[in-house]
Length: 310
Ligand code: CP
Ligand code: NVA
Image (cartoon, rainbow, N blue to C red; front, side, top):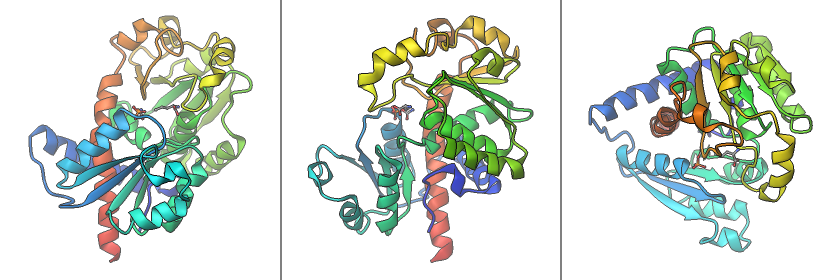
């Protein structure tokens, strides 16, 4: 049985297989063909943080696959009152067929997976957001930019930046990450990516210079400067991220056919200007829609793996 906890756990071929499956299911969905890939299956969706896209894409996705999603907010279940993750996992995974979790520490997700009888999907932790990256890469493929791909990530060295590191180092494309000093990616995650990069041929640049990162890039992306759980640092962060806004001056440094991506929610005037967000190069809503298709690909792939090993 396989889980989907980080992209590091997958080979390049497996990631491409999931993406191809997502593309196929997207085409079927667009043609109003809904195959029961996962009939009567229940997806438990455990949220310890807010969500719009992740909740809606997984809940709609599992329904379109023939199953049903069960939204579980930690405010409403006993987990929020101190029931351990290990017990929560042993109970829920005896009743549902797959679980998606959004939580804080990545170790909490690993704890759940350790005790789970069913596949577990990472719907975002403080360290990673792998399901987002599958949608992002699907968008890049559809834009025809997956050849000679150069991604510039400008902003916080957070869960998104870490997931870009994993994706680039597994698939073998060029990734440049520019963060302010003190907001760099975690060293251990970077080291892991550099190890994968040796095999895949990925080029990875880490810098504190957004202009250097964006120069001739074919994809420019960013994320909020204040992630969930960091609200009290907002004032300080806004000061320290001065100069890291992706605006049209910065976009001009990128390749002329470059696209702009953002996982959303976006905070205009902070990490991205209104002009870039709403501009012609922005594919943020195509990207958001691709959450639905990519999440379905992941669920069907995990389910198939389980069947193959039964
Ligand atoms: N991008 C993303 O995961 O959005 P939500 O927080 O709304 O799920
Ligand atoms: N880095 C952001 C992503 C939100 C989808 C956060 O963790 O809040």
